[in-house]
Length: 530
Image (cartoon, rainbow, N blue to C red; front, side, top):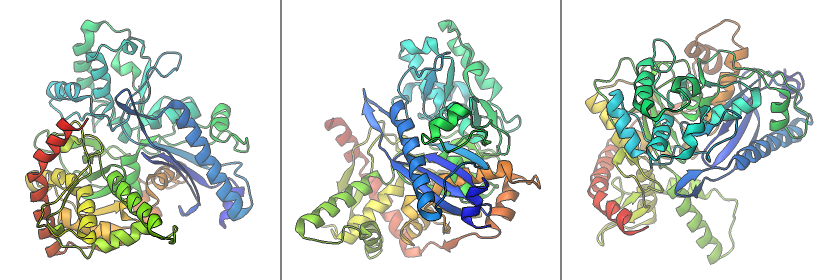
């Protein structure tokens, strides 16, 4: 069956992911191959000191993204999307979206990027004897309590962005286990929130005499493959304002971008891992056993089917890189006519391969916001060089690329060198890997480990959540999620692997030494530049 027939017969599967800078939709056929795409670019806003996206832009962005997908389908195949086999919704993990009992959002969406939750995260980590990151929903909730915010008394439901969209499309207050594990730790045995931590939290806030209980305001936790509701009449109109899409489409459990990244790189089995590198970056290593102790650099979350994962999450990755590329594009336009459609990213990234392995002594901090792994509650983007350093364009961009993954290396050094976690395969995906070789080679040097990249590296989490939606409706053999991915989707395709080059490894270590030595400069910038 060709793509047009698949779409006309209602057998195509739709995945939609809300990323930090782009909402993306991917339509896949019965062989899980993308056949159409749509997107909408957006940016978070700093409002009253907190990073947010307004409720209005969330829905406008979703509708524009879907309209872009419809336009792509009409252009390619000359048909409309009337019916779908399944839909999956994914979004940036964690954050804070509290609603009252009437379903009204009580405060603007607080994203993963906010670092104002330090006191709450520290107190909860001590109470639970478990690392509770700043961006997790429970940290945001408790910080709002500590701040005596009036809205807390009225909370009737608390969810993530993916959970919110799914709820409004289906009426179901559910969440995939991977995303749920970033709201509150999940018990790998029960597949539900840790009962002991729920009990401790409720005892902690009992003197406040809130009208709600934690276990009653959280979404119901679902595993990959479990039914999560279907598209309602209202939901269909919310998604497709043209009115062509019909209700009744089944939806898989909504997931976070970390979970969909694992699926998109076939990294859900123990001893597999992946690195996602875009606006933020994070590595996910599926564990064979528990870590020896809690560590503030390492978050424990789960795969979409509930296996424990060690996550190193870095708030910053390519935003500062993008800013420098934009400036160089502007200078090019100023100096004379050129091909504005040229791949300036590819040109600059590839040129970085000609730089010195240690970047000639140059150092770049990409801290657009705070960076919890390195202990910065706030960030200031910085470029630092000495007068005698080798200041070339190649070294400059190599330093920017190294800086984009330096924090990731710091966290993973703890996993590999202190916890002795073993991993057989790490796969990269996201914008950093769209240019062939460059990001892959530098990440291999940073982690001193082979890195694989698949042809679908640029498809990212939208394709990953489409695969989870397909797993819901196209798994007649009732395979486990790892077997479904291995045998049905990837069928032995492990991508293209690059091994670490010893000179690059040594160069990255030298760069990291300079990077750490420059922490006081970053600290001074945070103090002095408001």
